Length: 412
Image 1 (cartoon, rainbow, N blue to C red):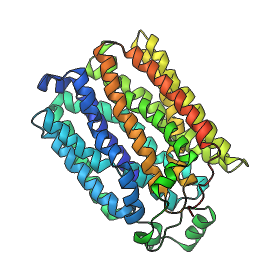
Image 2: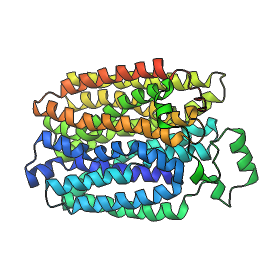
Image 3: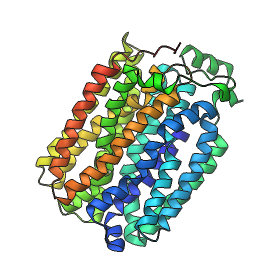
Image 4: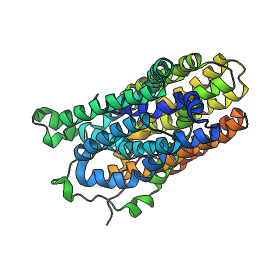
């Protein structure tokens, strides 16, 4: 629940810019192309820091890195609300990327420490579903802030709740070895379920070398597959309200309400399919890898439903196709995030998570920018067709690269 609250607030910070497009255009006269760069600025530093953050997590642990990160991202949200122009706003978004960079690698590492293998998908789905739920409720809530108080107050609001989370994380998070309330029976359950072991002391655990991991087929396959997911995720995250406004002529209030529907559906499939159903099946079948692989591939295949929005003429048609897309992406996301915990050598979950998330953030940078050029040409259909092609490449990555999710051998 703690990790899920953090992700929820993370994504409030991220969707803020997409909701504020019209207000920023009015305030500073930005174009759709400029908006694409502003919306992706967060991902620039976020992506660049993924591999270093993975190393830091493996070396210094979730608790230390998480505290510093939560403080930085709260300050960045305040700075966004106080920006005086495009340049200072861009700088604040770069700082937000620095603060939020450890979030998902840290979550993967914490879940690996705390949960047996057959409970890991549902545990991951709780914090991953928060990303979808944040967009479902965050877009309308932040839209009301923009309408009633102006765009600056929506960023100051997320800064305030981010700082509250920093205090909560400081007070609550512990690794299993640091938690005096963890009973011997619980520790035994975690050991029997192959929870990721902690090295003692953690500061001297170095994990597998990065170059060694980058040569592994499983790492490359998982990275390509999840980068494809993130490309479409960020296309929808950043551009859905604006697409509904520009192409289907909805006002801000209507577009934010329509935007919430695909995200609510993604939240449900994330929890029920990617979380509960996967763990349920894993406990009852001999080939657990096949369950996880089927969900990964099937989810990306459903995601290709975004291509149908190319032919939509009404808001409901567009939302229906995008809901099919997000249902698939929501279902596969918890499994995708948990992959590092199944394939990583000892004390290397953070590194593999960092490698994966570095590539996914490159995709997240490209999606808003490329779609901005399509939007400038009034061709969202072309953006949706390209997204379907990206997902097809992701399916190939999972099938040909990731394979049976075997643990990578320890380096010599």
